[in-house]
Amino acid sequence: MGWPLKTRREGVARVFLGGPLKVAAGSEGELEIEAKNIRELLTQLGDAHPALKPMIEKGVAVSIDGQIYRDAWYQPIPPGSEVFILMPMAGG
Image 1 (tube, rainbow, N blue to C red):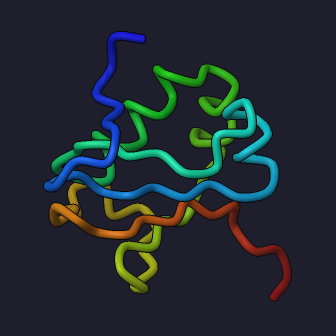
Image 2: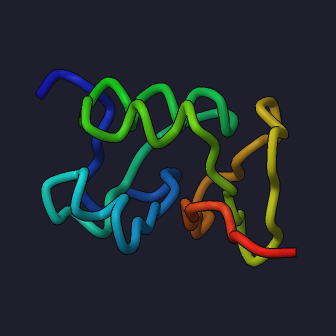
């Protein structure tokens, strides 16, 4: 593929996709990606899986080790983190 998708290496984040994001990624629900921050991570995901781009552009929430971030593009992603990409919750 030519992008920084890693296979079980130390120093990379484990990224989990669920629901429609997983489907758009071709049923790849767990990936390992080396990215410095949320923006870099989402760019890599969109480049690797073009069907994810419109969903990412519409807006997603990102959880890094249990802390949810929204629109925090430069939030660092520590090596070894568990990252969940979530569709925004509807309602109010």
